Length: 95
Image (tube, rainbow, N blue to C red; front, side, top):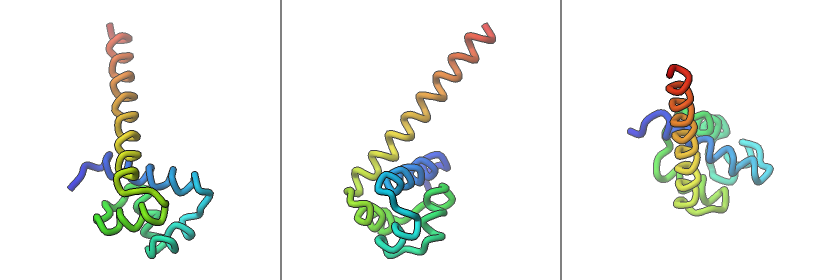
């Protein structure tokens, strides 16, 4: 099972793509044939979606599954970069 940050980053990717289209969670859920509360759980990183669900979300968002995963990976890399910068700053301060 993926780590919590991977699941959270995937959820954030879904949210960003949904909001980029100006859609509500209800609209995305209807397009993906999913429950609105489940879409909310995905976006909050509370559940790890199955491959089928990932595919449904990607189709509804009009992107490929690969693009959706790549967007999540980009968010993950940004988070890692921010952590590294913070750690370096703390080391410099602690001197």
